[in-house]
Image 1: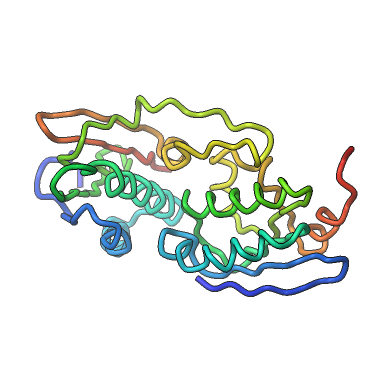
Image 2: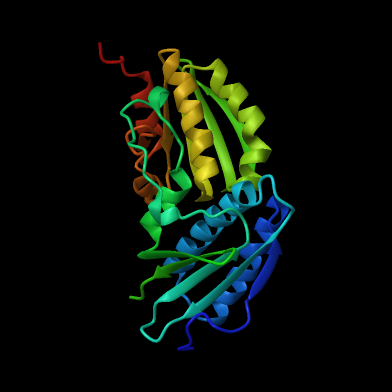
Length: 143
Length: 116
């Protein structure tokens, strides 16, 4: 349980919207197996679906269909790490600039809402581009 | 995801959503939901039975709030669960999607005179 993110990926899915409900089924089982508490399980679901949606919509646009790999692991300090990999276009969500939320619904620009939620629910977010692979790790601190 | 609509006194429309407002859920109710919110000016969305909202669900709600507010009306939420409330807070959309603990308070909010 103290391993980092090396080793076999827990889930490999096509980067397709139809795969997203299945991703949550896989992660729910993994959260139960790893005894992740309810609040973090909920945060993990939301973040996983937002990141997966981003990959489905943008990563392989104009490219051949691809896949996403998702893994969940518990670190030695009790934090849960949710990691994503894809071979789509480079995209660094940690560099994403948040649009300000204006005061009136009619003026609102909803761009970046998913990333804003991920930033709010995960305690840490790290991105790296390794060769042709996007690697994103989200950390959900324990306790 | 299911949706039902109830007409209340004072031209208030109560829209009851139940289920999960994720990609699949939002797609299921998008058309009827947008149709109802486009035709009414005092709208209360009752989310007592909604236990999960993703960004796509927030977009649906804000889109409706925008439509209603553009026509001088008001859209609010009621019976928000703690987990949905947390998503609203983190999204920064609390001011745009006001929520009230009870249906009565939500109805009072949409029937109150708009500030000049």
